[in-house]
Image (tube, rainbow, N blue to C red; front, side, top):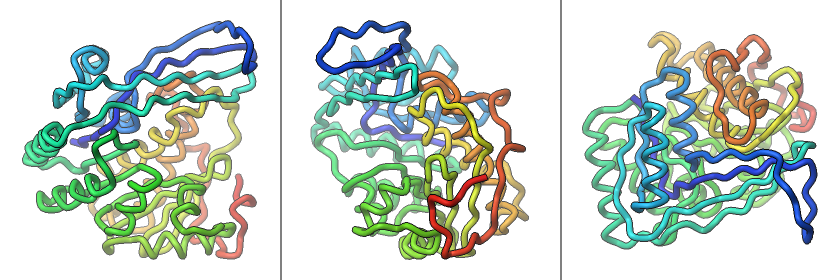
Length: 328
């Protein structure tokens, strides 16, 4: 079982247009309405690929209630804490060239009592001994990075591994606290945390390794069209997918994280701390993420969409290699 927490869930409305011009009337040629938020997207991708999962999130009666219903209709188990403020609704505009414009609401304000209830609910879920607790996405008003740090400590108290995919101050709080067993920043987010550019493999690997909180911890750095780097105490593994034609990049990083976790919970015990296990994890992550970008809106890939054989890997790529030179 993998538990996902989405502290700031959303309903995502994706509008498809031939072209988008600011200041003008734009007419949509299609639309999709999906339950979203990074943790929910991870749960959707896991469920579609037959990995047992449950999605935890705060929900108001109206918008949050719609998310509960939509997820339940697809067979995903949900666990919610009732809040007074309305869950956010986001708009994504995608034109025929694949260019994406996002307009995200800030989300609800969680009171101290609502935050305590959410933490208590997660504590109860951890009693079921899931393999991972995944905290993904931004935090709503009323919570800060210390909430994710508290979650990491709580997960470890229950013997559960803790994965985080967030950005900004929340990412900084978790990274410096050393409580995460897995983090999944993109290259830009890692550079922001470092306070400097990280142009080479050596720069990325060196800084990422400085953030590892324990001997089994790992960081997956998304590099966009340049693939991804898995960094741990053993070194690094680069993975890249053969070129694809993108449809929508929205939620692709969430599928990448889901792919990594799916491989982690299914590999044999003999491969857990071995480079072959690392290759399997990062190859699956890149395969799922690459499959996601070929699908519309926030559609998550299923088994028929994913092509592991199209992923190429390099163990411990040269530290002097520029990130922009990594490709299949």
